[in-house]
Image (cartoon, rainbow, N blue to C red):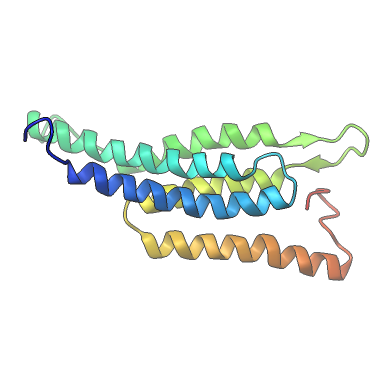
Length: 163
């Protein structure tokens, strides 16, 4: 392949990145509308980063499988997911704070939504598009729908103080 030919694998990955970022952005938009610390841009970047890391892992495995004996190179795809979830968990921890005036914990739902956005990105990276779209819709239903139920019941996340 010459240096100016199109690498369709990379074009495919760019399409996956776009889908993951759109789906992550939908969750981020909900968090933005709820005035939470991690909003639209954060969720877009998290979903995109998760997709990119898994896609690059696939490319690296293919690359080294061509140049190294199969007996020498052994891969564990679960390690890719572990690496993404570990990195994202640190980001999520940064969104969780204890309010000084009320003593309540804030940011738990946002941290969870960041982790889910990463999972959606991983799903897109391994071409599980129905799971990715379905999970996005479920998360939006949970974040918005349960918020309305909590308001009607007078709960309004009384344990965490988060909306």
